[in-house]
Image 1: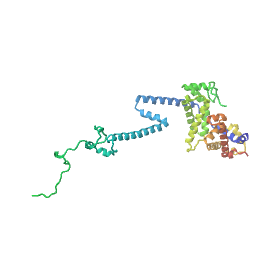
Image 2: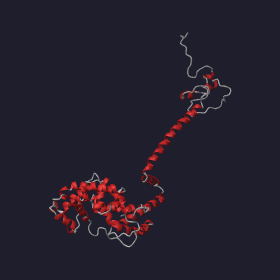
Image 3: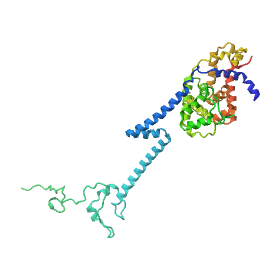
Image 4: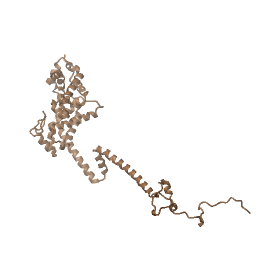
Length: 174
Length: 207
């Protein structure tokens, strides 16, 4: 190592020149006072900001964002938890919808699609062959049902449709 | 040798006779006067190290001040495992390296005037009296070449050269400041000197 050091003698002497690069006299007169002033300003600024927030109470959102600003790791965690909340929300919403659809289904029958379940009305329920053990109560559903009441017959004639009237094409006789 | 926390340190222009450990304890309790004394004690050494790394007085002033402010804010976490001086140096070194990484694309430095006593410096007199190109080169040119060569080194290599060959720190101290082992310091120093010798070949070669 000594041999190597000897080789660097001239370089080391040259590097000693760097020691002569000093700031002008008096440069450090205010250095420490500047540092202390900046520390005081920082402390005062921090206190004022806290007091201001406490007084107004309006900038809680800014404070909330400031909390994350100094903790970047929490930002990812917060975003992930929001995403998970959204996914669980969608999942449970679908499940609850399916459960309510199942309430409309008659035991022993195959599952009906949602559209046909909607079409069920009181007459079909009545005509269905229900086992005696199945209670026939009010069936609730969140799906819109146009009408559970049987449509009234036209002019009180049984069998006549309210929408269609029989037409005759026989030529009129004088 | 690493300075102990309780050893009185007489820095240039610093108040003497007060133990460093006592000042640190008082500063930790919020005594800004005590911290002012600590700043005065180490300001020139910290500043010089940062300056030799950045070659710019304005940057050195900013970084050194920020290092002192950061140290005050983190004083509560200072456990005393190393001396305050070493701990402070580590903060300054990290701040400087971070600054240089950000400034990497803006490669510039200002050349500040040499001290007016430079011409009387025995090292320099010996240097320019040799039969080397130093005789013909002006001081400003020498400084320029030296700074350019230093700036071509990587930050860790430049830091080791500055701390050892310019600031006169020991290998042990540098290892503690830079958070590496002594072997790494020695190898970095050797490699950096080799690089510098190559960059400054025309000024360093013997006749």
